[in-house]
Image 1: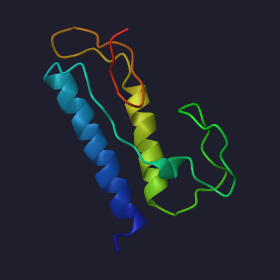
Image 2: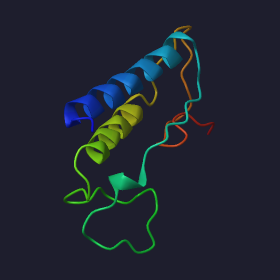
Image 3: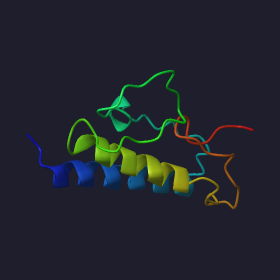
Length: 100
């Protein structure tokens, strides 16, 4: 089994690489796929949607934390100027950049 540091490196570095490649290649649409594990904790979920907060404690250790951290990176990439000076449309978790 991979240790948490491996999950963190591959998930976060991989996400950073994809975001940077999108910026450098003027790709204005990136679909980021996360995992349901970022919202699963000890609490029951009723009528859950994308606005759900992260749980106080993740059900699993390691992977969900890294996927949540990558989601934050994706959201922070919202509005970055692409290489040729174009601005991508607004961002979301999935898809990352979508037309308004």
